[in-house]
Length: 275
Length: 276
Image (cartoon, rainbow over all chains, first blue to last red; front, side, top):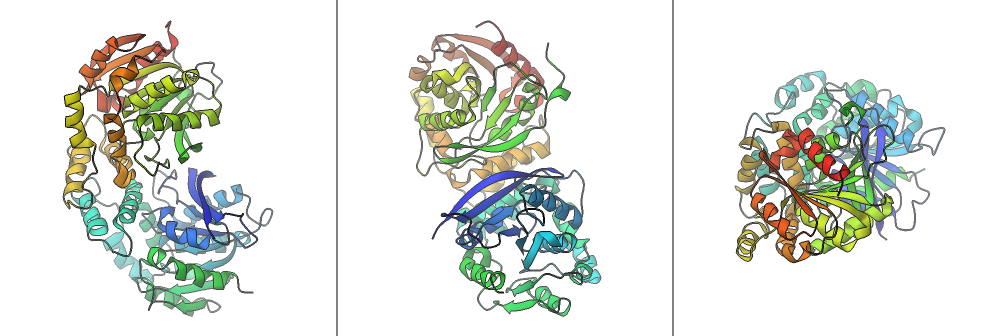
């Protein structure tokens, strides 16, 4: 089975939202569509390989968060609820929700997990189930520490070696889980947010994920990978008692969205399609 | 009289279709109606239609202005094999057919000059007038020299310092006539073409500009700006059957689309709106 892939624009409160759609060649089928929210400062293209695999039996939408990839963004830093509100605009505009085509299932990674949590708690009619590998769950103390390292503007233009350094670490010396052309593609997607790429990480580090997780009523899959947020993802099980924890860290690491796309998609299918 | 820029609608991006798949473009126009012929701008490679973003807004005060990304550049899907200029032009014909706009005025810069003139030759019913700046016209010796420099794959993955040099040339040590933020944006657009970014220049160096120019029947403005191709553009007036040369050597070709956007739009509009 193959997947048909296309790109289009929708609308959100910050302007146009760019998204990539994929569905089975024969049509979208009857399974609940999946929306994937990406890490920042990347774009929906982070999911390109995974999206094609998951779309073999359902519609999969990968939007670019406002200000990233091909989406218009805010002029000043915003919050995770702002991003979630823009994604609400997009999904309602596409006809999803209680008064339309019903809810979607949500996948998230890093910043995208928080947009997923906020969307699910703020607009429960839009979200049926969530799968959140690499959940950006931090205590207030961890957030304070991380802000020192990752918060605030990056010296993208003030340090002439900043972009070349990102190139060296992510493309030349990057993980060989994906070919150099794909590493180049992701490097470019990272650059597309320009001098405002820090808005996403900043919003993540200002978000009280734990409080919102306590309000989550939808079924939640915590898929634990062998990567920096694996322990954080595991810890979320103590907060969301009804969550299903699946540990695939022996087989899947940070590059699993590309290198183990089939395993990732199958793990989520089993959860999304279970009664 | 030209309307104020406040009359311009928000720039919108969209996808059309060509023989290579989805074709990405940006559209801008006045909020009200206009009876002026739409303008299509063909960009230099390896950039994208975003090269014209500021010029597009200036030009769009009284007409629809479309800036497509050439197949394989920006957000447009590209061919799987090295194309010719005629392939790019045919793909643009597909896209314009889909938009059903009727004839347009076509503007080009560097690679875009050849896409524009080839479209005018292949699909004369689609192109009313042309405006060409930095026409890619070379002597055999120039063509061969440029082909060796620009018409081959870039050492993206083989030379660890390549990107650093390219970034310095295009962003950190580049012409301050345009802002650093904008230079970063244009650098990013250059990089979006990936490992096949040399296909645009390679197509240019395989194109017989001198012979094809003789077949252009539409009125053609040769707008000469200060650039490596200024003399070539001037020289071309002997080749195009219906050309007019306007010299603007105080404008620097690569940056004028930003730094002199309103002024360039004025010259181009006057030509498109004037008597042929």
